[in-house]
Image (cartoon, rainbow, N blue to C red; front, side, top):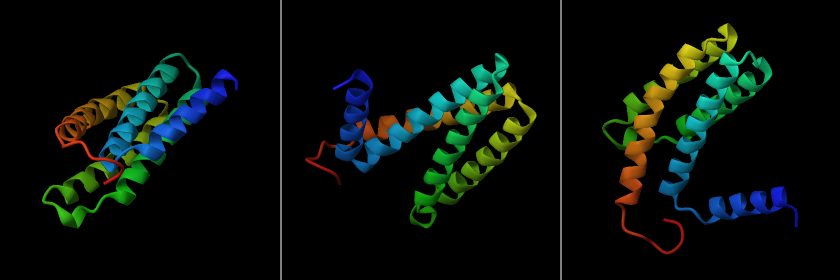
Length: 130
């Protein structure tokens, strides 16, 4: 099996065996990576890569927004609003080719990712998905 195929299989196995909390952290990790790569691509004048990264980041935000059960916890509506704000900012940044706005979004997302990671890491280990 080729190296890219092995990597793809490892990723698929990681996703299929991850707990919901770990999947959430994986989404946030990829969101941060896409935002960082998108901003770097904008800085380098690579509009095609930047757009691809920012559109993927928007897809992740849409997934996070769609899976959020805002009514089930006190901070849910605020997080839903934040996701909507980030989507709007990223669309605007992609149109205007504005790396600064992308980095501002990343500065908002990174602490959220870190908080979710800390929460998930503090949860008791379970066998299989919960």
